[in-house]
Image 1 (spheres, rainbow, N blue to C red):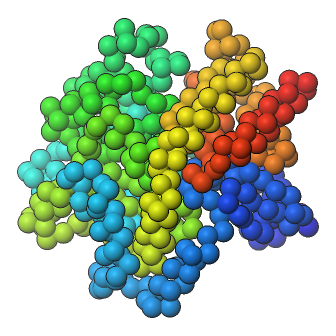
Image 2 (cartoon, rainbow, N blue to C red; image 1 turned 180 degrees about the vertical axis):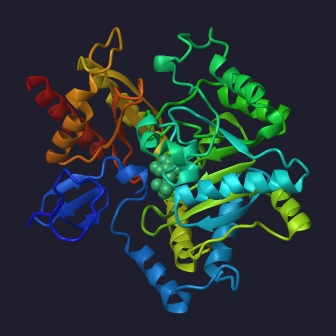
Amino acid sequence: MEYGYPKGHVFYRKLARNYPLVTHGDGIYLYDETGKRYIDGSGGALVTNIGHGHKEILQRMTEQMGLAGYVHGTQFTTKSLEAYAEALGEILPEGLGKIYFLSGGSESIEAAIKLARQYCLESGQSQRWRVVARWHSYHGNTLGALSLTGRIGMRRPYLPLLIDFPHFPPPYCYRCPFNLVHPGCELECAKALENVIQMEGPETISGVILEPIIGATVGAVVPPDGYLPLIKEICRRYGILLIDDEVMTGMGRTGTWFAVEHWDVVPDVMVLGKGMSGGLFPLAAMVARNDIVETLKERRGGFVHGHTFSHHPVACAVGLSVMEYIKKNNLVERSRERGIYLMKRLGELKAFPFVGDVRGKGLMTAIEFVRDQDSKEPFPRAAKFTEKIIDLAFENGLVLYPGTGFVDGVNGDMAMVGPPFIIEEQQIDEIIDILKKTFSQITKK
Ligand SMILES: Cc1ncc(COP(=O)(O)O)c(C=O)c1O
């Protein structure tokens, strides 16, 4: 049977494709109703951190459902909520100790924007409300989060609805926005933040938000050393909160629990999502510095915010079980080690003339495609190069995560590879074999 628009009643994410129906998953593999096997090579959108088919997590989840499947976050707490918060508290950076559980990344970004605003208000800085974000970023699709998101194609249809948040250029060394080369650049891209703050008026800025390693918009772009510490220092100098969006990078994806740890930077607010539950339940969180929450308590009695599904007991039971599984199996270390192997093997793909860059950290990696390796000229968007690669890889049994339009708002092609942390070396070899096969087929076409 075929699934896809216009058949049936589902409002599909993509209206121009047919969907295979997945019947089940096991480890890093997914199976459709015809029995075809797919490697979940990007873990959806870098979500399924522990892979598929975990019976013990199912058991923990249903146990909690049987005990107390739902309570309202203003009325009760639960054992699963308390236990998960304790466990997360142990791994969070020093000083970040208060966790507000939510059900999606965008929702948690909204909470972070509001927390920054309310904190400024309560600490006598009522003019501060704007959050500075970066171009080439992704922070979500709800209107507040989209106002921060620096992804032109997603913003354009909704521009009249967006909030006026300033943006500054990303640390995208492969195509440096300042045409400089690190370390000679002296981190011009970080200094650009100070420039934007000054031009916009520091007294109007509540926070600066960034993905420590850029995710789905450009694909696993790791900033040069020194970049994040300098951003933190600029924020400190102007009394601005640093909001660390770890929705994609957090919970072990890059080989440390949180990506900021690679540079010993401690943010003021952190946002988590995706891998928290390994995708097994809608779960995300906004984490705040203890004293920020204390200020809210002292001045207004609390955070003026709330959602029906926040602090969800079943979500927390799943989150805790996933985290325990990660700890028990040393999966953060595994993500680091397998990531080194994956990067090494992805490097071989540079032999294909359209592979411009291979980059990433841990099991968050990406391949950027170019028309010309030397000039880095992108393919024209009309060529739909990424779509062709993604579709062909899919046919060959490998799921990748696409990204387009990041070079100039229209052109730019990349695919992300971000498999579950449980992946074995020989399964990475399988991914590379399929990529090589796919790239050879594209070359022939
Ligand atoms: C860095 C980052 N922030 C925020 C979001 C938004 O999360 P969600 O899709 O759960 O709303 C995403 C999702 O891809 C993301 O990668």
